[in-house]
Length: 372
Image (cartoon, rainbow, N blue to C red; front, side):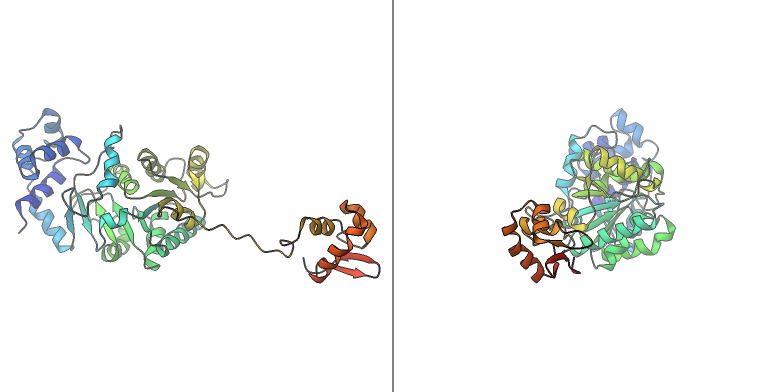
């Protein structure tokens, strides 16, 4: 049997639609048990009474905790060690209707929230993802997982699912923040995926067991995806999308917002291009994201450009090489004239280019070699 404190938290989690700052303030003043009793009696301020009136007689607390116990889960609050306080404290500075920290989080999985929040990135995007978008999301997630960065997403079809699966395949940590009860897998087609995340990573919800996802709950959930992540990466997003909403929360919380460019003709990338035009950081590889969420000084390595035999040439050698025609051959004097270099200074560089296989001497004339 659960303790009075656990039942109080479970009751408070259900009695008002989260987030509810008035309820959070009451709990901070009275403690969870006393706060629950006051709400149950209706002995609260009028604003809070209106928000709790419909559910204050709910008697589901023990049933909700029993469901959680059967799933091997736990109820996490600000009084627990794993609560990621620093990630949620920024909500106190927001002036947005849903811009408040959660009161309670229902969790299933062996991974601790505070461990995730130290080094995590959100990968989000449209449900109607293209093959390109799913490929990029999987590549980013696998790269992040290999670099010990937790991948946070929403468990949905499309980009979310591709990111979760890739992180699991790379033996990394992934977190799904869902918009309904932990016992109500949504979408149903991801029931197996969410079960596996709960076995190896972490599944989180602000809503008690039995709660059904709704549009408003998805939008409310997005703030937690952004808050738990050091940066939010939007892989594909339409003109109006939940992924862009998540990016908006990340920006409001002061976290970096990143976007992956797509074809300019793709409706699935309109939201990404809008973010890139406005403020987002363009990313194309996992190292770019690690640079934003990693430790101080953990910089992305420079991208390797294709190697060319011409890369090591001096300025003089390059000018002489460029003075040779694509077809045909020239005398040393003609090369000197074309390069704008005195004739007596071209024979040495021409010899070096010949050794490198870049030019060939054909009688008294020079032509470009086969190695380019």
